Amino acid sequence: MQETYIDRVVIKTDFNYCQLVIPTKKDFAARFLSGLASLFFLAGIIAISAYSFSPKQSTGADNFTIVWIIGGTIVWALMTRVFLWNIIGREIITVDNGFMTIDRSWILLSKPQTYELKSVKNLRTDFDDDSYEENKWNNNSLFYNTGKLSILIKLGGTFLFDYNGQTIKFGDSVDKDDADLVLKKLMEMKVFLSVNVKS
Image (cartoon, rainbow, N blue to C red; front, side):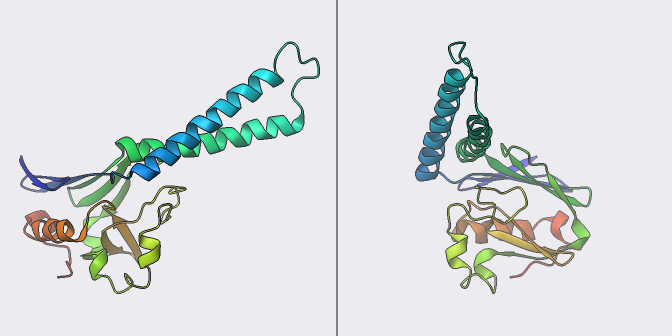
């Protein structure tokens, strides 16, 4: 199996197989803020739970405290999700046996998305897309959402393709110059011959 490195993107290829491994962006602000928020809510949950359910508290926890603990736990889980994604998250795009699978590791409650390769149309970069300029602010937003499970995690993408009336995005952490090189490399592969690539 051949491996090609384009900046932080790893492209693994074989005869009818291709895999892109794309780490998340090194965003210090997102890591710091999500980590700090996660620790803050965890400390709050532990402190309030310990106080409310202490044997010294004869009345136990009231309804407001229970709701706060449940809500705080949900927020803590979301912040932890964001933190893990920014620290060790990565996108793995695999093309094999006529299917493309996009797997975003270390996103809790997420599962790989699989697409039939023959229905993948107009593979392109976000910079070449007609809607790029009008969506430029959203594309650079820290907590931009593009998927059902993308709460507080930007799941946009530098690469786009059309699939059964939908626009699918992946490869968020790839910049323009590297994106052009990756797309050119993909166009050279036999496995992508059936895909209409926008030049």
